[in-house]
Length: 395
Image 1 (cartoon, helix red, strand yellow):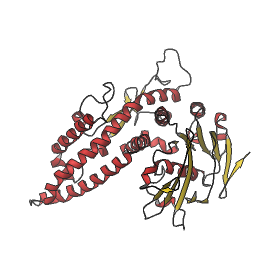
Image 2 (spheres, helix red, strand yellow; image 1 turned 120 degrees about the horizontal axis):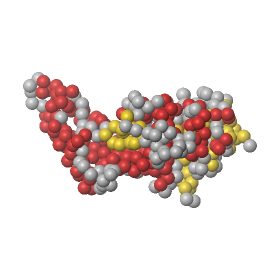
Image 3 (cartoon, helix red, strand yellow; image 1 turned 90 degrees about the vertical axis):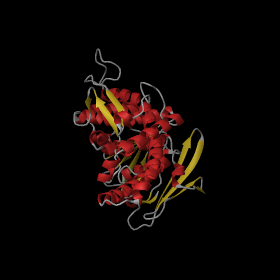
C-alpha cells in the first residue's frame, strides 16, 4: 500500500493461520487491515467517504493485494483519488469499473464498532446486511447503487411536488412521480429479495453462533441454540410495509424471494404500498416505503436485544452476527479472511477465550492488538510489530 491513511508505504505478506499486528494506539495497525478491507468491500468500516483514506499531502492512495484461492492467484490494485473516480486493475489489466473487483477477496471484520449493530439505529443493521449481501453476491453492489440513486431522485420530486400541491397548482413533478414509483419498486424489490433470502440463510447460523459465544459449557437441560441464560438468539427481517409483504418467503416456508416470481410479487406489493402512502409522502417530502426503511430484528428470548440485552449479551450477539457471516460465506465455498481489529481489548476474559477458541481453526486470521497480552494463546501466530511508520516481522 502507498499513501493510505498514515502510511507512506507498507508491504506485508501474510501466511495461512493467525498473524498478529502489535502496536500502540495511533501507530497505524488498524489502517493496515482497513486497507485490506477496502480491497474486499470498496469501503471503510470507519469512515463513510474515501477522502480520509488518502494520506495528507498525497494526491492518491494505492492498495495492491495478491489473493490466492484454490491454487488460483489474482492481483488486485485499487487507486483511491479524493474528488475523482477511483480506478481498479485485475492482474494488471484495467477493470471497467471498480466494483468488478468485488468477490475476489472476502473478509469478515470484527471491530469495537460492532456493538452499534445491536444498540444502534436501523441504518447500522441495514449496512451490515447489505455489506454481507454484496460480499456473498457482488452484483448487489449495483442493485444498491441503483436503488439509492432512484431514492434520491424520488425524494427530490416529492419535495417539489408537495410544495406545488400546497400551492394548489398542478405540477409536472406529480405526474413524473408515477414513473419513479415504478423504478423504486423494481430496484427495491430486487434489493429486498436479496435481503430476505440472506436473512433466511443467516438466521440459523446466528442462533448457533450466539449459543457458542455466550456458553461457558452446556448446563444440564440447556437446549441447542441457548446461551447460559436460556435465551435463544433469533434474527428476522422487518419490512417497512409490514403485513403487506407477500406471504411465503423465508423460514418456515422455505420459498426464495430471489426468484423471478418472488421479485415480481415484491415489486407489486411495493407499488401498492406506495399508492397507499402517497399523501403522507407528499406532505413530508420523503419516501416512506422501501428497503431504506427496513430493519433487522434481533431478539434474545422473547425481548428485543436493543434496550433489553445487557452489555455482555449485546457483545455476544454482535460477535454472533460476525461469526454467522463467516460460516455463511464459508459454506458458499470460499472461506473468508477473518480480521479481529482490537476486539479482544473490549471483551471480558471469558468471551475473549471463547472467541479465540471459535476462530482459531480458520484458514487465515489477522489480529490487531495494543499489547501481546491481549491476544489469546490460541491465536499467537506470526507476529508483526507496528510502530514509527514501519512494520517488522518478529521471528
